[in-house]
Image 1 (cartoon, rainbow, N blue to C red):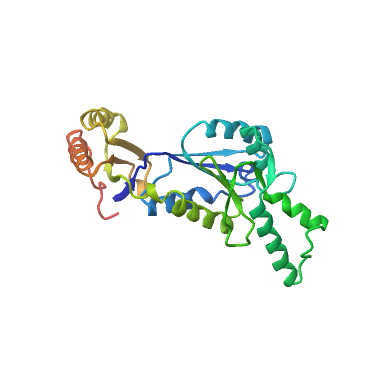
Image 2: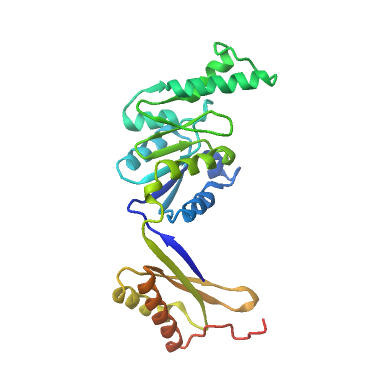
Length: 273
């Protein structure tokens, strides 16, 4: 198997915020989608973190994150109900107040007017319901909006952190817009490849010295080993390398030869299965 990868100069990370994810009431869909979007742009995900809705937990996580120079996507908790604490926690982490962003205020008012035209709610922004909705436009001072083509209520961006709601139909277009608008210069910066193959009849402990030697011989190449019990009764190891194309190709050839030298096989014992 071979796939094209790329490593930008800066790491890309994901923070998922929500008790419903940690409790299992909902399953995260953002990480595989972000991996897909990054891959399409020659980038990759360097890490992901899942945290609760607790404000102090979010603030502590963000304080550590803001201290780094990474590109970070944060999903969840930017609504206006009591369990939505991300906006407040962001302001807490940065030591700035929450302020109603004028463009967010305008967009939320447009959304309320659109809903009123469809017979739902009122366009009067002084009603209690609409005043509550306006809270979703209160962002940490200095933040910029992230457009929301689904229902106009924006997310926000500050210090290379993009904050989006937990709903995939809203968050995913925001991810795409951010990658293509703010980080286009990071697309397809450095070409890397990933190669892998299956090794049979070989304990992982026997091939580990070869993996260590491989990384010494080719310092820019990373080796990986993923053991599996296998289907149809054929345990195997998914072995592979990641790195610059020419070095990775050399390392792959070396690893294949080492598997056979160690007594392993490159095909299942019974090819009919």
